[in-house]
Image (cartoon, rainbow, N blue to C red):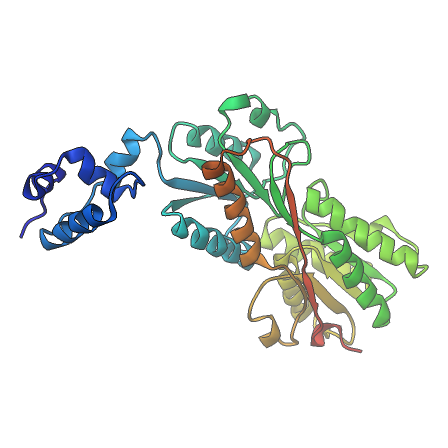
Length: 336
């Protein structure tokens, strides 16, 4: 039988359209046996409710937006998976926007989403610029917003982060315990919340072990693999570090490629550790020692915070921070 509309279904049941509609919205004011009869008849007549039209009437999109700086990083793929799982439980869909670390793209996405495209936003920020007032200017009109991983510290909104300071401290200390004395710290953006926090852990671990911090060992990298290849090779040749701490996943990979081209042996000549959620890290040659964030759980927690705001009536400006723990996995890239 062809699809029928809600009016035809209501007529077949001898009920009003509003009663049938309430059954599909799972309203509490409809009797269980009536609802069961409606759903059974809908299945019999091959009726498919138009949720999109219903959402328009309710002025809800049943969609949440995820804004991330990149997708190539396995961490963000896992976080999105965690968000999507929670969204599905709440009968929501997701939209994914990628900023490529471009601050203007981030602004454009936020403004676009305020036209009703989404009911809420989960974002890991681009990190560019120091003025984030475009978010504050939205005032009470701002969509419910949750930060994860990379945050703007001057914006009051819930966030889910990891213990980046402790993780960086332990990662640097691990290299020192493995005999490293000239440890290069590779970073993309020191002004980012996580960039500053991770770098402080690196600096304090050096101080604890009486190793002088030298600014030249902080290597500013970029979002370009080609540029990073040149930057890291120059650092390896000129500074001759015996340890590399990569603050983000792609810099650890770039170090592997650079060492391969320069015929430098990992871990004999330089030991490598990095933040990474890559599941094949144990299969690399040599296997990569990693600080691994609970990415899927981070995404799930961020989504739950957002739905608490959407469905629980919590204030958009509620300051709530969830801090999850990362784990150090020691592998061959830092062996003695």
